[in-house]
Length: 159
Image 1 (spheres, rainbow, N blue to C red):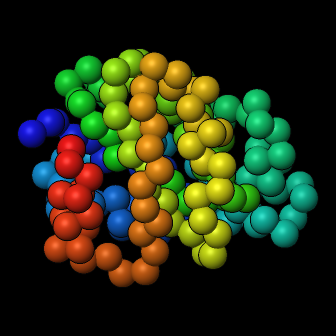
Image 2 (tube, rainbow, N blue to C red; image 1 turned 90 degrees about the vertical axis):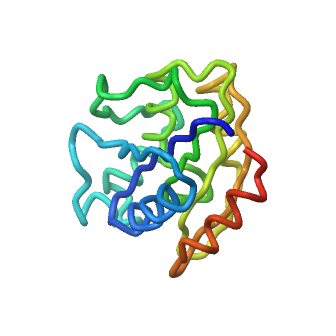
Image 3 (spheres, rainbow, N blue to C red; image 1 turned 45 degrees about the vertical axis):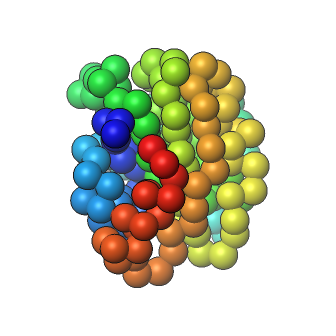
């Protein structure tokens, strides 16, 4: 059995709830990806073309700063990486996270929360940020997730 980490970014708390339950169910350590400047409700207003999240997502080279230095990924074989889906892809802060650490030889399995869209091009958008890792699309974990249901999903991954 490999050592697992659940790393997640959650702007509004939805993904955080799922990540905490998933870490418990998977017997994994838990790590929150924290932006240096937290997102406000106004930052997340996707209807506003000048909102921070809209500007970041319209610029694929955007790399919002994160709090770093408090994670050592060397001891993990598998990273379950969670985020909310923004504009059919992962928020660019996930690219920041992947570029901040060395994930060479690691398996990264994505999970996400979404108001209605799927993973879209999430794997393709993230792979260049961790070119020596294997990134796999995992599962949308919307709604109330039970520890038993999440454990069954993790067990099915054979990690």
